[in-house]
Image 1 (cartoon, one colour):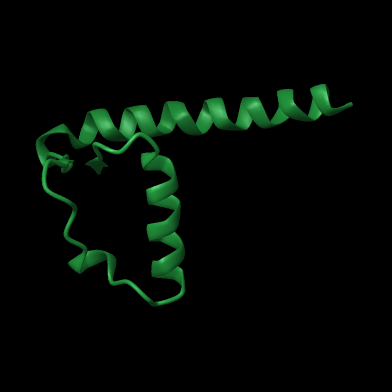
Image 2: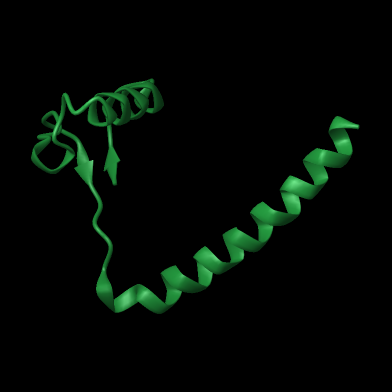
Length: 72
């Protein structure tokens, strides 16, 4: 995960994904700008990541149901 210094990093992320989908950018060779913080998963924390991912999946499923109710 990259933490960009830009104000609109989400737009940059969307652009990078788009370029990758168009095969215009190799995400594995992308060099982030200077000053970008790079976060990598720590294998020692895999159990925590998996627990949190499971919780996120449960919340996502519940929110889909709530969204369907609110949409009427």
